[in-house]
Amino acid sequence: MSSINTGCSKNAKPALKQRLKPTLLLFLLALGSILNGQADRPLKREFRGVWVATVLNLDYPKSPSTWPTAHQEEWRNLLDKLKATGFNAVVAQVRPAADAFYPSVYAPWSAYLTGKQGLPPSPEYDVLKFMIEEAHKRGMDFHAWLNPYRVSMNLDTAQLSPNQVFYQHRDWVVPYGNRYYLNPGLPQVRQHLSAVVAEIASRYDIDGIHFDDYFYPYPVAGMPFPDSLAFEQYGNTQFDTITDWRRYNVNRLIEMVDSTLEQHAPQAEFGVSPFGVWRNQAEDPRGSATQASIGAYDALYADALHWAEKGWIDYLVPQLYWHIGFEVADHAELQRWWSR
Image 1 (cartoon, one colour):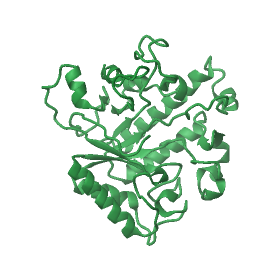
Image 2: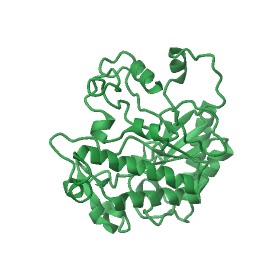
Image 3: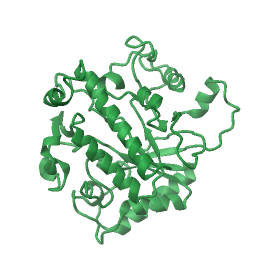
């Protein structure tokens, strides 16, 4: 997920979420409307969204601090700039790596906020509550962006708080590449992540919950994801292949988050920004006319079409970071494909 990127347009949000058909949010909406012959169709409301990444202090805060005034001034200034630029929604990363920008029973305070994981602001206050209130004061929606499975950005466990999930539930965590992840194949992990969403949805006036493209991690050459034992325990008798089981695990999480929001915040939307290629047409007749080296369905086990068909999500923001005319993944072709 790259920092500060624009989303696009959607119809007005109803009083209660309608899950019969998810709204598709696409980059370059104006171009998409022209391509589809809908340039003159009026929009009831536009979702002019911007991602605000907190991981590695990419967008906010630029420098960690325990001092509330520093957080608050920087957030207000950022919102003022975004509002003046024309944005009306922020998608703010409040759980970058099994940590939190709010007081939580499931995660420690984020090191990207205060400089040390588990260290609260001083004096302590609810940062997320403040962020939401300031966005709403400016007429901007607030979508809480969570990275569900990522536990750490490296393998240095000495930097992790004792009350982080790595130490609290070590058997849930697996190493892969240069990071630690929650194992998506464990039912306990799905229950934990549903509880994380419930905590936010029941306590805060959010307008949405947002996941990006990090489900199963991007493949590392020559390194299989270490979940064979979990597959033997939970999937071997039900699924013919480990890949089908992995997709089931992600599907189940998406469905559970949808149910959690219906229970605790039915007005809030659930959105995902998947990798821009679902599958190539050579692999699936429903796929796009692309030749991408990986696709979300086969590499990340993220089946966004299935979630949309089931009505578990309200919007998609596919990550179309390729230029028009790019041979293996043409932006215009993918924009049309996602629109269809």
